Length: 235
Image (cartoon, rainbow, N blue to C red):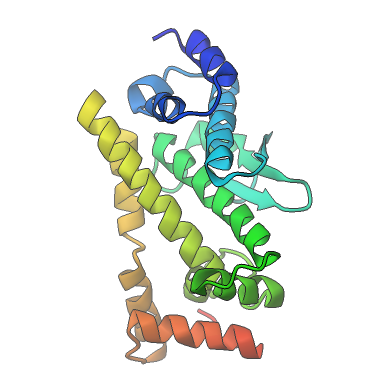
């Protein structure tokens, strides 16, 4: 594949299902590992453009920072999704190949923008209302440090962003492996997310606090704390 030519074609193509497929194809490890930093960023921007077109809104700008605590973050004020150059180049946790993780990260941060927009709309479905409460109260929304990690991960905004981005990444890379062969980056990513599943988080919380919550019970408990602004125990 002529990567530069493929990127130029994607950047000039109008949105279509074909463009989505061709964009996703470039995340397969056999293509991703032949790209440089500039090309990675351009591909991430095309991915974000596709997601925005699918959702009927303007895309966010992908901005690369030399180093950040996390791989990616979203800023409603600037309208940007920021990506850590250091993580892209050097890996993340147990990941040496960043193709699937970065794909998931863009989908994740894109979903946060959807949450921001929906929270200001008149939508009244269950997911929107839970995220609206979460965003307005900012409790326990703080950061993803290990202190309070379970409550951080199971608050509505993070629960839905992880759920939707992981589902989309899984679907995309299953297709890529079927069509283009095994993908080491995808396997590493899948092992990573499997090690911090919702079930694992609930078990971790129950072990720490001597509780016997199911997921639904713990999720409801965390949501009620957000609604009442109650400060709960931290891990």
